[in-house]
Length: 260
Ligand code: HXC
Image 1 (cartoon, helix red, strand yellow):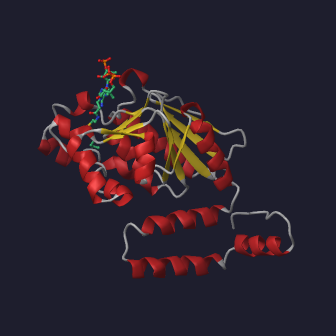
Image 2 (image 1 turned 180 degrees about the vertical axis):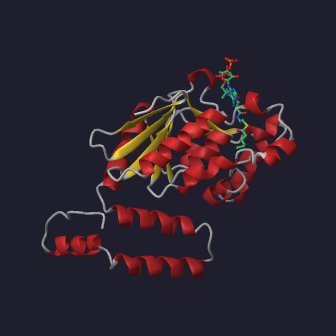
């Protein structure tokens, strides 16, 4: 229970889903340094809360986030940016072990689109707009827009987005595979929380291993990835939850997970 300047943090009714809302309305949630530090603190706290099984990251009805704060960075120079590892702290959210669902309404541009892609999956409201407009500012994506986007949608679509600076509608983003599902805008947060509750109803050990295995597929060759997956799969047989899950199936009852 601390007070935040740029975000709001809450729990779902069950207390099992953490909800982080970016809340800097006067700048369409432009991601200034202070906002990102608060976001990292909130995600770290929820990730370490044993009662929480999943996290939803959302923004405001008009903007998930309109990008890095252009006014904050406009007059910075290379050497200062290099020495301070400018934006290096942005990737901290990818270190969370619990699944993080982005619920996007309105603009997800530049760093906002990149932040959504750092989450484990994206649900979009039907008013969502995705883009990497850095090219219009004389710069390029700096937090995954030339890397995670390619892995999400392939080279040709990614090239078109980063070279044109155009925006995709929610529907286009879904068709391209950037977005898992589109909902009426005013229901997308509730839908993301619903998915979060479902994830949180399973063994946390298993959901975290699922996330770890899928994310490894971006880093490893197929042979190494399959090896890693098989080892994790085998490791689940050392958990109480695997024993309970399979026993409960045979006994035709709901499993009682202990996250052990
Ligand atoms: C700072 C921003 C901002 C941003 C909007 N604002 N986006 N301030 N950084 N990225 C501010 C505006 O200056 C304005 O402040 C207020 O928010 C409302 O925005 P408007 O432009 O008046 O709203 P609208 O006309 O509805 O247009 C919405 C918009 C436009 C199309 C999203 O704001 C826009 O193009 N924003 C910039 C998008 C962008 O280029 N993002 C990429 C940033 S670069 P005032 O004070 O005038 O009311 C980037 C690099 C990432 O992200 C790489 C490193 C990680």
